[in-house]
Length: 198
Length: 195
Picture 1: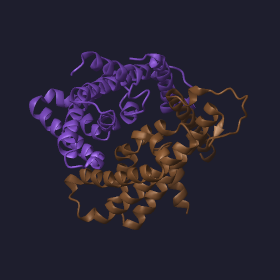
Picture 2: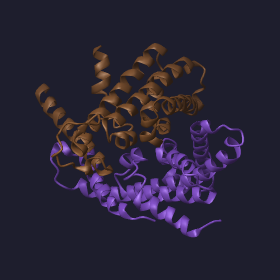
Picture 3: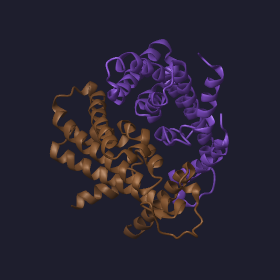
Picture 4: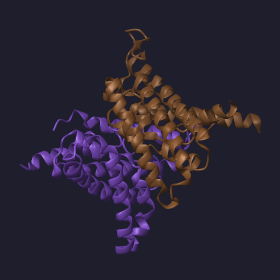
């Protein structure tokens, strides 16, 4: 359980490892989008980690990256089609970012650094932790952006109708700025924590 | 059929109004990762331009002559990523043989391009927008140039940041992201342009 949380937060793919920036910035305009993106990536991550781990002894080392990409692309296509069929609105608002999960560095990085060396069970759990870490980061960012930019959370207005909406926060610049400030706060907390421990 | 005005409008729209990195958030990883110095940023931009132009042309051909005739459009994502991965490999080998100096300056960036989502993104968007061959090619080149423009501007800002006084907790990536936000804000100024 401790290792689980460690993976989700201390090794958070977005905030600590700075992986998967494109979907992070591109889809964190509202909590629903962020959640949809995070969970889709989690599903792909669990499946691809599991299968790559099963096949790890059969894949020749030289063409492993290409093989990983094909396996990942297969699952991404499945998730893409499932979303189109069952959640067409989310699929439409995430648009091209769903097929682009294929080139999300988090997934390839876990395949290369974890799934290719560990048992299928462990790899699936690793996929789950990393995926939830990614989802958590997306939800935090998108909650800040939706709250500041639209005065709402999950589409429900929370700040009242008099709230002056800072639309800039939902537009692209807001993505960069919010992520920058959040990383700054994390860096601040880390240096404070480090000083305490040291 | 081929309308030069339309091609020009695709070029300007993709380059400025819908800048791939700053407005569409495609290709952020290399944008943040390889932008510490202007010369490496330009080298990366050139490598991306080369691959992206080829990739959009190739993926259009694959889509038009292989996927559509056999009714396999749902395999687009898989087919395109394979095309791109193979292309990057071929380009890498070709440059290594033909021009060692160019390889020395671009070589290390080439493998990174496979996972640059802007490359796959432009191939997928071309299909979504129903572009023809020339239009796909132009939009690929324009997207790559927009990436180069963004990474070049950003690298220039980051070189300045190195020598500025910044509160210690904002040093490094946080301040870089905030400045990227400001650059993106400048690009929003183009968003009123309708072509």
